[in-house]
Image (tube, rainbow, N blue to C red; front, side, top):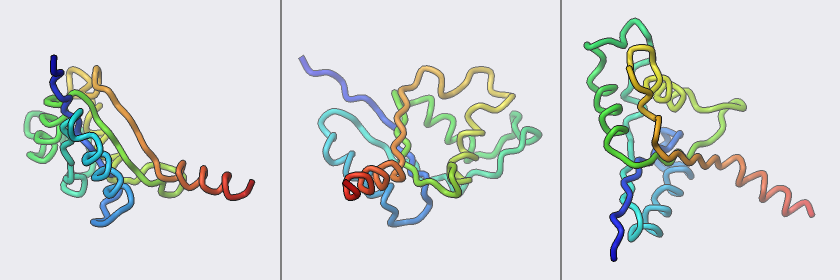
Length: 131
């Protein structure tokens, strides 16, 4: 019996075209191609700044597309750097659009969510090298 591959939306928190995070997502996609269908979301830079006053039926097409994409997948993988001890602004902005006031149901509710932060990888390397 063959199980259906799960559809996973992968989001790189970095908007840099050749970021470590994007390369990690591509490696995960390649290594797990037989188990999951990994779709890369590359529209972080296209989302307008979150503004609750703009979050109504006339919300930006980019926001609508992002929300619809989230509703069409089984899970989300976020691979992100740390900027100034927090999430990159574009990633935080995207998350804000998923939990805004006018969305009747939290779009992320029920989705499997995994976050990989390369700051943790560097910390592990540092600790191992320091021993």
